[in-house]
Length: 440
Image 1 (tube, one colour):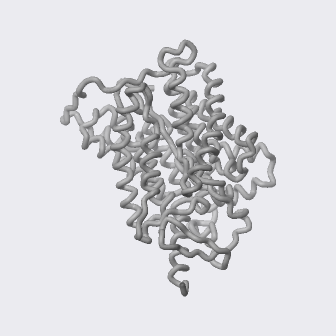
Image 2 (tube, one colour):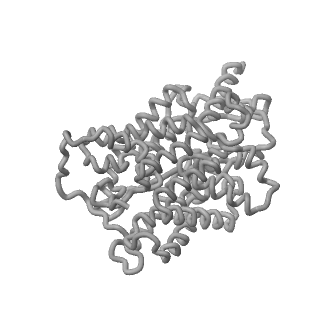
Image 3 (cartoon, helix red, strand yellow):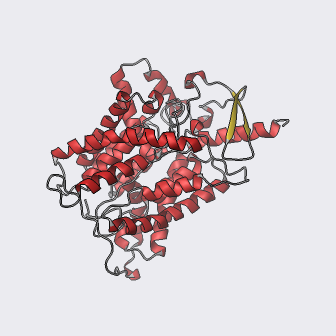
């Protein structure tokens, strides 16, 4: 790759984040919690039972009280405007997951792996997973192989550890390992097709379900997702243990900036800035090819147009933040300012908060905050020889999700109800309607 790093310095290596792994508790129904984008949530029963519920929002808009009743929102209502055929391939493909329940375990496992690959960008859709895998192949088949191996090993480990089956089926025990495999290949000094690397990739992928389960038990107390924290912890542990001078598995050398970058504003290219939009999204998977980033955007669009919109806006705001700090143009063109902001904008803009114009503005603020936090953490972590990965996204987004407010239009989704933005908004509107009709 191009010898750059998540630290945001031209001398470092290609960055890769993240993220999302919302294991905030026990996972909800695989198909229903499908787009849990990275969320493990308390099980509320089988999705095929679809119990109807009466929802009453309490004073704290971040919480919701659910009682069984007559007003459960049908999962298909979020897509009622679409032709019937499209409903089977968009959103979280719940119908397909139901259909697979009576099929051979091998087919189910392939579905889980593909959903795990797509869950990196909060998407719970196997077709999106296929598109993302194609994008990785366009970038570099070696990266695609390592990401796939990591996802498979992590999913198998979760099965061996008897983790919640619905969470495994939703890909929530796979996506962190997808990033671990890809980034270990990106940061390896041995280059492509160093086959011995598959052994440490498998070993570190096995730690992801451990981190996810442990963090989920803690974060579940606040109904928070764990995002890509397991990936960040596993990769940081590996890079710290090996380092640049390891004789078996040397990694790229990360160093802090030691001189003033030469930034000439007359050299700024509008075309390169335009290309950096999809590249910023592509860097979520450590890819710097604009065509690959475009494929990733199509994969997100297939599941949720609102997510695709916020992914693009987040990348754009990351570019703006980089320009405002006079960052080296090479880092901006390379997408290093876009990927964390893109993830943060998706997470707040309808994924873990119901989409309203207030939460949309909050998502924009979170994207900018994440971009500035990213460069801060990149400079700090470069001192100890580590990339910042998706730490900025995780910390900034968790901070925004912990926000308390009396504004009922800023509504944090319960993890057990998170699917994808369009469906999340319907849940929120239904809850708001029931609250208005409640005699209490």
